[in-house]
Length: 412
Ligand SMILES: [Zn+2]
Image (cartoon, rainbow, N blue to C red; front, side, top):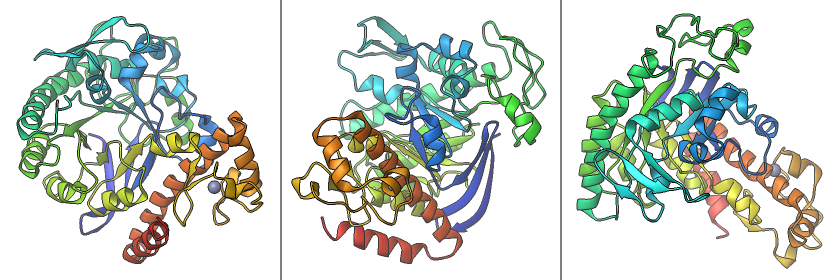
């Protein structure tokens, strides 16, 4: 089981630590969305520099390019992209179901690559196998996205997701025991002697390895790997409760709270789901965090980690966070503004550059503008969640939330 220590609870909120073979995640934490094994416009060293603790890649995108076999050969996701820290993979379900021309059956889904047009099939078993090869610490079960937001469609998707979860659990256990194709059998929790790529045997205990062994974990794609179930049900609270109960009854290591839901319905949805889920397992809120209020709401209602492509996507469009709300740096009013983007921020962008320079870079479409903007936006959301964690520890969460949100949203 994935080791998760809770240091403090305040209502539904918790402060804790997730221990993975590639390091710890102090929670609540914002996880960088590294969809194609890269957080767009940022190097992994920059991600470390701005305080990221973990990244989340997407199985669908990685099997299309460069392929799960290649990542396995490279030594796993962490080694491939040079991220020295904990890793997650989303199953790819959400992205596949967003594609046109997807054929769904009980067995799985057939779809065409949006890159080459080549035909692919993904099943719960193949998603687990691909995630195993990619070698992230934490995997998401393969889930079906509902065809619409109608109750019947949400229920159908949830029920199939549950049936697929059972298959994911079986396949994950098979892979964990080394019973998968072309794998050397090994026991969970033991030092694994297998040397598929001629690399040193890795420490495979669920606990944090000692420092002298930790460096040996990198470059080995098959350390202990963990599975999260996905709670579905859209905005329908009865479906959410049913899904949470089902997922809670399964031998999984944690939970992804996913599917489609509205920001307005999120607090009630989380207040329904989180009390049903076992307290001693971590919860990841999938794809949320573009709006700072979602991070406060998520943490307050019992979520431990979050990921979202929004902050870097907005950055590339020149939409930048400040404590007084988001600004568009391309706006003419910044042409002669020689002040830092956000004086209170200690990121490389704010410490070294001013708004007039950023405005110039965006107006002339220079890549550096997108890089600096991404550094700032990603740092901003990571920092907000880190401050939420601190405020929960200090019993100042309510004040921090009120002060932050009042200032942030008062100008919008
Ligand atoms: Zn900054």
